[in-house]
Image 1 (cartoon, rainbow over the protein chains, first blue to last red):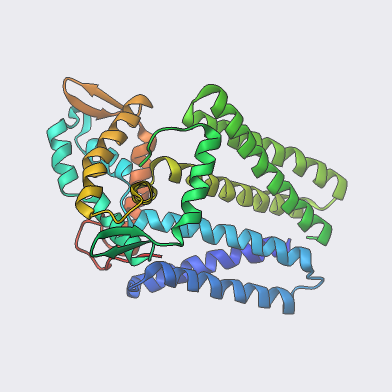
Image 2 (cartoon, rainbow over the protein chains, first blue to last red):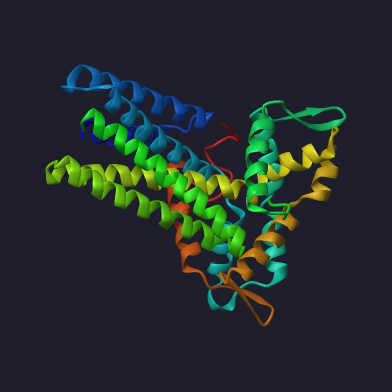
Length: 165
Length: 184
């Protein structure tokens, strides 16, 4: 029980710390700072568990790590939706703003011109080192292979043949 | 939580996630219904989790408060892993970054940005999303106008808009705000 309370409480405390810091300033590399905040939170709850919780065993530590880790990863993933606009949700919001009248194809084209999704994601891939720009053009970095293979294998298992994106 | 309880809970959550993934695959391969398969997989995993929780709680004879905390914590663990799994499936389906990487891999050489944008661009993204939303019944076309039918999408859009505003004081990444371009 203590492991579950510590993990959930620690994740909540880390989230509150992140929100408070963001009210003061937004770091230059926000995702890295969020990872650091949650890592510090993890170190804190492990220290509390080991020193203050009676009968704190390996099972408790594993459960706490799993719950805290999953909560942190989930928030990190949600945060990418905060930093970057989802085309589907942006479109849904844009169309919903027009109410029952709706939007014409040309209005949507104009909206797309103001939202360069591909260039934005390409810049992020380059900044993250997933894509390398050479004089000849864009190339994949070596570390992207695993990510691509995992999604490709699962899609193959599903039998999906659409290009995606 | 006893040591036995913690390991049992972790094993149960792993079994629930496995049930989710296997059901998702089997259901999708037999019906080709994308969103329905995700929902059915989630429910199958949840059923495994709840049955297992009942067995463990009855066998362990813990007090009510401990049982409730355990249920909530295991529910959170399963819910979040299912959310991550859903995003993994969706990454292969609709993530812009994955599609860009796939285009670059398919080219098998250095690809000039103009060529990439010719094959994959904002127009093709929006076209695909509109087609998907129309096919899913989230959108309808009335007299040449796209009209939104899904309140879920609007709620999700407002949820993220609120988070963007609270954290970044802006409503879109394409708005000039406090945050410079960044990445993980």
